[in-house]
Length: 323
Image (cartoon, rainbow, N blue to C red; front, side, top):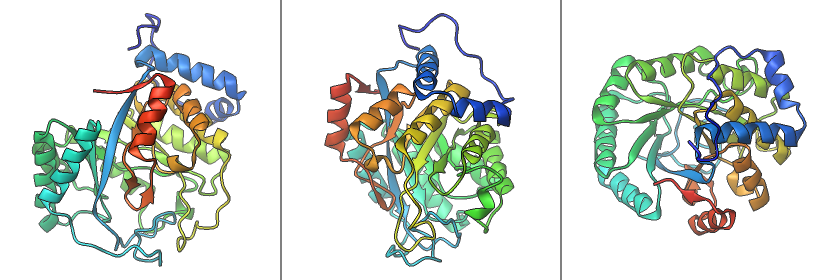
C-alpha cells in the first residue's frame, strides 16, 4: 500500500450493474482518472510497476477461430505452426528475463487445450522457472480440473485465460468455444489454488456497453482476478479484424481506470497494443491505475516496446520496477 494512501481502502465488490458501469465509463475523463488514481493509492505504491515477460512456447496451428489471433490455423497470417519449446529453451529465456528485471515469466502455447503428452513438459518448464525465483504463469487454453492440479503441484502461480469481451459480443469474435467454457477453466484454476490472470481486448468492434459487460464479467467473479490484462487490438493482416478502425487511446485509459476502480486490489496490466501508445498515453494509463506491463520486445507474435525504452520511460516518470 502506498505511504500516501488513507487508512481506509475501497471495499471489494462483486455486484456491479450494467447501468452503474456504463455511467462510470462515461464520466468526464479527468474525474474518472482521479477516482481511479485515488483508489490505486489505497492498495498499491503508485510508483511501482510489475514487469512480466511472455514467451511463446508453442507457435501457430491453433484450431480455434478467435478473430483477432494470428496463431489460428484458419487464417493466412504468415505464422507457421511450430513444436513445443524444450525445457532448456524456456529456462534460457527465463534467465534472460530475470536478468533484465522481470519478476514473472509467462509461457503461452497456441492450443485449444493441452494434450496429456505435452503437459509433462510444461510442468517441467514451470518447475524450472519457479526454481529461478520467478513467479510463473502459463496460458494453454482450456484446462480440466486434474490438469490444473498438476500445474499447481509443479509450482504454477498464475494461469492466464482471458474472457476477451462481453458475453453478448463474444460470439461475434469466437465460435469454436463458448463463454461458459472460459468460465469453467477459471473455476478449475481457482479450485486448484492457482491465481487467475484474466482480462480482455478493446478495439474489436465492440460497443462501450460491451466494454462495460467485460468489466462486469471480471469484477463479479466470486474472486477478482489477481492480474487483469487490458489489451488493445493489434490488427494483423490475414485475420478477420485486420481492417478494424483504430480506437481512441482515451478509451483505453477509461477501460484501465474502470478496471482499477472495480477491482482495486488487482494488478492491471497494459498488454498487447502498447507499442502503438506514445509515452504520454502510457503515463495516463499509469495515472489511471495500470501497474503492470509486459516487458520484452515481443508478445507471442506481435511487437512490444524495447526494454531500454521501457526503462527510460519509467525513469522519466520517476517510477521503478517491482523487485
